[in-house]
Image 1: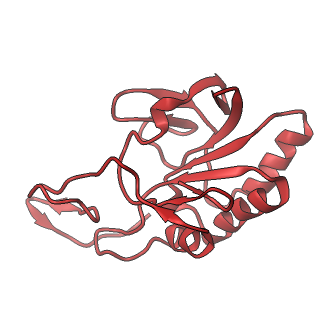
Image 2 (image 1 turned 60 degrees about the horizontal axis):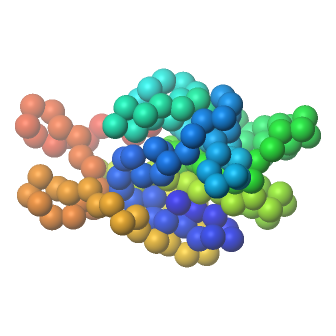
Length: 173
């Protein structure tokens, strides 16, 4: 989770993090405590424009595809009378560094908190470009309370790819 004002909770782990805690109000917003937010997932398992958890909770959202100007989208929505008190970004590691810069601009220019969720590294422990830029811009990092566990029972630090019981290298998104 990341906000230039609120800090960044290490985009390192867990599914189901904040996803189940917001009730959908419209296709692009969520409410919590009277505040209204906009949700931007990237490549969610439930399909384009949706945010889901492994528990089966699904809400409508605004897909953040490669090349989308996220700042311009949000400014256009606010200019049309839309409301946003905060922004949630899921799978932030897959965003381009330029899109992360747009989130920073949303925080600085619009005064909105941006909470980004995702993982920091791939299975080779190499930083994703989006995660790297988030770390560069964050005021602070925090790890979420819920921890993923390795098959051996230790805290999981990165994911892996399998191919018939053996690890393999492959193309990242």
